[in-house]
Image (tube, rainbow over all chains, first blue to last red; front, side, top):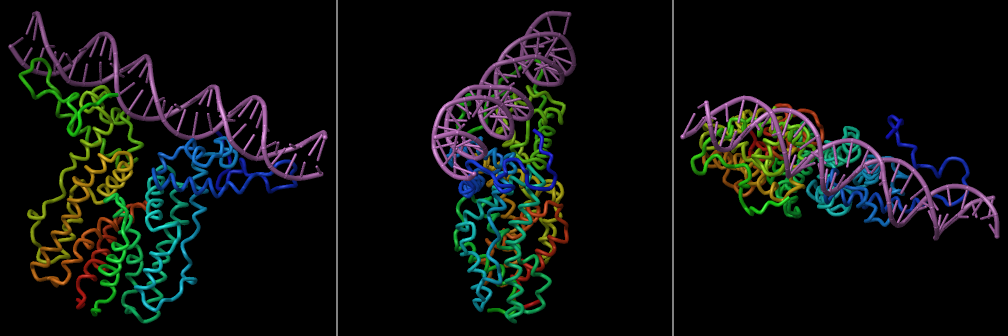
Length: 216
Length: 216
DNA sequence: GACTTACGCTACTCAGGAGTATCGTAAGTA
DNA sequence: TACTTACGATACTCCTGAGTAGCGTAAGTC
């Protein structure tokens, strides 16, 4: 193989935009399906065990078609990761008046589907991370960071609201990681779906407990 | 392949004990080296990327020798996991008088080497978990559970000592997962070694903060 | 309708890794 | 010393999965 395209999307199989073309155009409407299925497999098996044969089978698209779009498996997964989109923008999340309600709103947000699908994708991506530094970087900046950032913002919002003492600003960075960390750990170790009760317990017994030292 | 040995160690290549034997005995002194190297590779690359060729190369033991001892790759990894031994027994951990000191003692304990080696092994095992339900079960009961258990015990000890209010007993199970969860998450997302400062920050800003609602 | 291009299908090549087989030799035991 | 068994080395087989190639056909464009 030879991919001489440092630091950018591969140009292989990504035509359909430059110049006017004649003949059958690329069926870009398939892309969504393919990327979604890739994420499903990623969530179910982890990067190493994702095979393009299976993606092909699952989507009804020929393997050759997949390779017309994305030069390598890594490229496909990369595209899938990028396609997940950012978590809900905090500015768009209505201020529900209390930190607790705000946090629960994020938990219940349909970003990436259910919380468990979200976690499964994270887990599948974590294994991907070992295979490619490039992939790791994208996952970090596109998925993990923004997700933690949501919590960070909510915590700051609560501070601004005066709900929690300004003394805690310094601990916000660590606290923002608590929910992602705990839920991921739960999934990895128990290998059962993580129930909503667990999220609530983490919020009440850890986050809020740590932030309300004057009692509730 | 055919391994018809449900629910037990494979008998393949595990002689050396039954009956009296003549001739050269198994060199069991190699086992430790092999298992340790397996853990190293596991920590570095994750289960999928561990190859027995590499274990062989690394240890100077022939691949055939490895297969004389362990029937399959999974079996070898399984043995490696079992060989890590339990985390420090709480009963043996000196009561340092304060929860904070007790927790730090666990962080600094040389179990499995440095904290970062410990985390790397956990991470490599997490990817293993997806490949084999059996492996997953062993990791859970031999490694993860005992590790969380240590923290659970320390928290209870603090309660018994009257250091923290008995009101918190119900939240101990969740709290016990905080340190493993946070440090694993950190390693997975940052992919840099986790510094001691981070552990301290987790202890102070999360665990102790959640447990000392009357302020310090 | 003529032409162009993407698609699905099938059949490849190629590399790596699990597991096996064989053999000469080293290291023990009686 | 004679015998037994494990070891290291090497060369396999087999399978899976990434990536390629060529073809007939469908779906568009001019």
